[in-house]
Length: 127
Image (tube, rainbow, N blue to C red; front, side, top):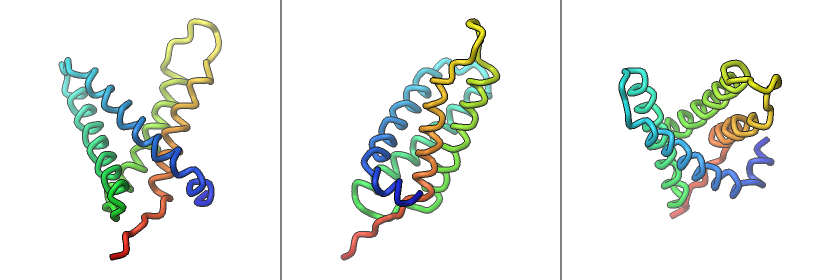
């Protein structure tokens, strides 16, 4: 698995940027916060975005990121992927009589991004 992630490094690096944009747009669309659950979810996703930006910055500067940020982003991304799979399969509207399995690509992509964060070797700049 590490060999796969090391050969596709740039794909996962760009995927992190796309996930930051996607999660940021989800937070921006939640500005009409009327309930405490929306505030809690929005603040949690904002914390996830902050950690993803932190990892992005350390990746650009070729420094070692914090272990907490890597593990948090990895675990939460995997959890979000599982949550999206559950929502697509069991909660979404089913007006055509079948489930649209094409939408399952996005949750698997998010889960693989989380695995990349957990499995990725951090490169340390030698001084």
